[in-house]
Image (cartoon, rainbow, N blue to C red; front, side, top):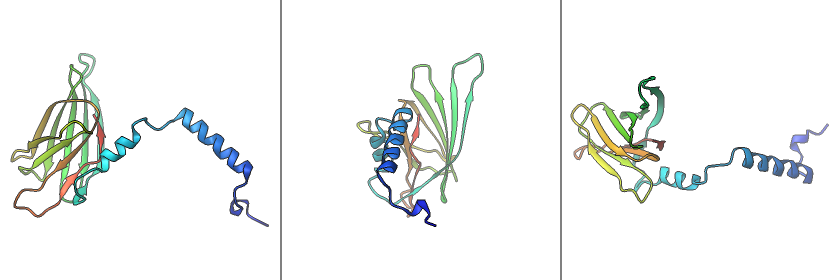
Amino acid sequence: MTNLADLPLDDDDQAVLDRLAQVYALLDPPPADLDEQVLFAIALDGVDAEVARLSERLTVGSGARGSERTRTITFDADSRAVMITVTDRADGLVRIDGWLAPAAELRVELRSPEPAPPRIMIANAAGRFTFDGVPRGLAQLLVHPAADDAGQRVVTPAFSL
C-alpha cells in the first residue's frame, strides 16, 4: 500500500495550501515592517559579538494609583548577563535602567532602527547604566569589552520598548 504522504502534490493539494495561506494572511498577517525588523536585528558592523539569550521577562503594573508599567528583561550570554528594567513615562517615552553581571565599567550602546543614532553610556563600576527619554519601538543593546580586553561584544536580541 502506498503512503499518501510520499506522493507528489497535485492540483487539489496546491489549492488547499493556497487557501490556507490566504486564511493565515487574513487572520495573522506578518507585521508590515517585518523585513526592516529582521534587518535591524542582524545589522551589526561585525559578527564578532556573542549573542545573549532572552532568559526572563516580567511585566509589573504599579497598581490602581498609577498608570506606570515596568518590564524587567534579562539576557544571558556565556560571558555576561544584562538585566534591564523598562519603565513607561507619562510623556510616552521610556526609561531603561540596566545592570551588567559581572559588573564592569563597560560601554553600553542602545541601538534603534535608522535613522536614530545609537545612544552610548558607560556603565559604572557596579555595572549600572541608564538611558532616559527613549522613544518606543524596536531596540537592541550592545555591550563592548573594555579597551584592554580581547573579549567579544555581547549583543541582545532585538526587543520592543
